[in-house]
Amino acid sequence: MAEWHERKHRVLTRLKRAEGQVRAVTAMVEREEDCERIAQQLAAVRKALDRAFYDMMACATQRELEAAGAADVKVVRRLDHMSDLLARYG
Image 1 (cartoon, rainbow, N blue to C red):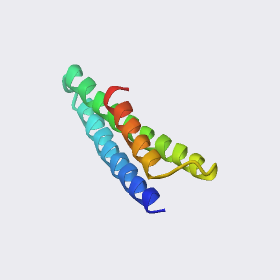
Image 2 (spheres, rainbow, N blue to C red):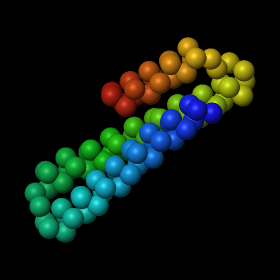
Image 3 (cartoon, helix red, strand yellow):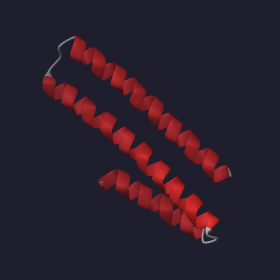
Image 4 (tube, rainbow, N blue to C red):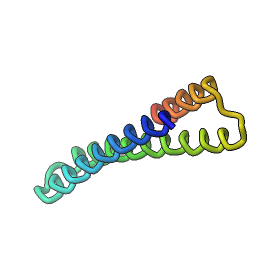
């Protein structure tokens, strides 16, 4: 259960950061700032949301493995590693 609370905290932090980024992008559009700068910020928002998605999918996978009796510390570490790889290169 502690794993879930840690993941939940990370996901919520990422979502709140993305929310702030979306507000900033909205303001940039309203101010008619440079389109390339806006695109860069949109890419950052997308990456933050992707990372939250990968963390949630790792959590869902972990819960399914636990329900099947197949999750242990080593498996959880591998899931975290895979989530990191997806976030970095996905």
